[in-house]
Image (cartoon, rainbow over all chains, first blue to last red; front, side):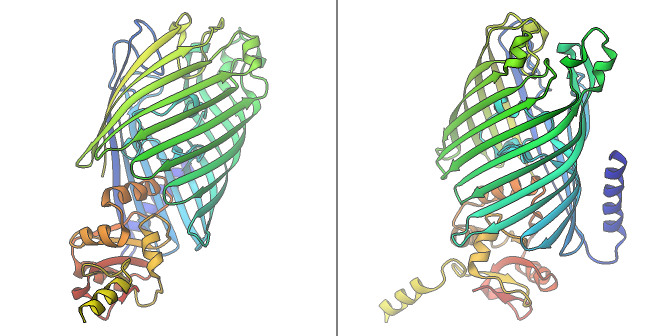
Length: 371
Length: 122
């Protein structure tokens, strides 16, 4: 699939540069400079440390859109951000690279590397400037193991008589990502041998509701190199499912978002079944938007039985300030963790060092722009 | 007479013609006034054409929202790979030249600049 993506990208670039016709190429991008730090010495909470880091949230994204003709287009987006497994090392990743075909006014087909449309904000997750909060709530956004996949989707759009936008988007594909599972003694890839899902939404001018469901066969090849752990603890071609429902409202001054997510995997006792939700409410006064977020996550029974517990709740208070195409955000989150299991936390929230942690505060400062 | 003028101004399709800025398309297309406002909400398959020399009047009077909030809505769709980015041009003449050569595009110019190569959307 990697080779396929490169071929696709190369084809798009070649077509764009050699065609005698005038083909539109548009470049755009976005960037975040972010600082994060927690208040608990020696602990890791949502990838933050007590020493503070510029790496966790800083990123640059670049996108090229090529209009081949009235029906066909090609899009590629790359992101430079911190390496998943090595702190303070930057890594370039391909976020999107697809060929789009506008079959009819109401049907668009896309093939290549795409964003997984599993949350309200998942398709522009890295574009901090268009979002209100400095961080995305982990209780929901921490659940999906993938942000992208290689495959194809179909976007059906229908406008109602009152101009509401109704969309149905089925998709299929596969994905392989490098993940840091060092907290449970495994390194290497997390694979979705295949995944299939559907995303539906209904949107007015000031509001949107969406729901999605995805299934996938999950695999963690790295466990094979760990002979001390029984197979039933890890992902070994196990079926997983992921359900998400969300809604947001923004009338220019009042903004509110609620979102719910539930993931479960057959077997794989060390891989958490999670149920999470959050609510964010903010109020915009000119260029200043104070907000708060409350989030909560609970771990499935199958994990508790073997001492794995990823329960937490958190309250964030923050504010966004916008000036000449730049957004400055400051946010403090107070996490309270559930009773620790013998393996500590196995989700992305904490590492080994937090098995005795009851609570922690995380501070985030971000400066964001788009162009 | 004064009253009549006021009434007729009020009855003009305010969403498309105001402050001397008009929405235009290729003569082969048949977009409506509603298509124009929907397009700048990101609800379109048309190619949007921005015009740096006429955007103030267009956003305040035709779209009815700030350029900034419209840009955010459109950029969300662009960075999601769901919409072609708007073409950004500096002047009325460049916008007219582009739209007359590209069916399926919508833009806006000062009404005094319109010529026969494009169609004013009413």
